[in-house]
Length: 139
Image 1 (cartoon, helix red, strand yellow):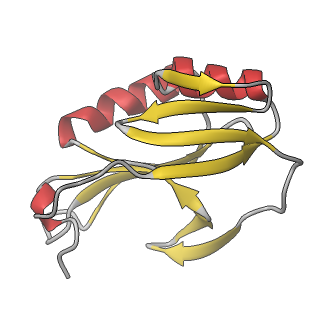
Image 2 (spheres, rainbow, N blue to C red):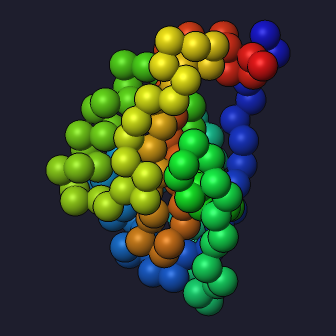
Image 3 (tube, rainbow, N blue to C red):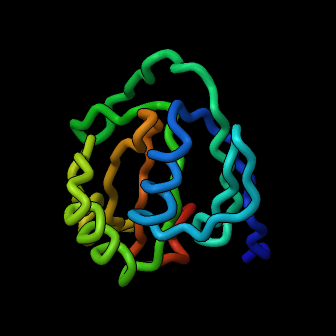
């Protein structure tokens, strides 16, 4: 397996304080550098940067497993044991799921838990966990 380097993603937000609360408190992402127009967060070892921007166009969706998957979206592939605690934290914070947590490909190659939700600016996030992480790219 190739060494996994942190990725960097800059994304638009419409309210820095709501973003700081969501990513800092609910998602428990440590905050890095910031200014009055952007905030760095450590999202499971990856650098994501929330930049103030005007509200953008609504994301479109693609059908996957009978669900309308929002595009674009981003997220993290978690360890299997970290998925449910995140679901519980999001539920406790009354985060509304776009696609409720469920298991895809149960008992098959690529079995995974997945869920979709929005941040306060409407950015779609998908967090998933593979029962066998070595099958992340298996066909």
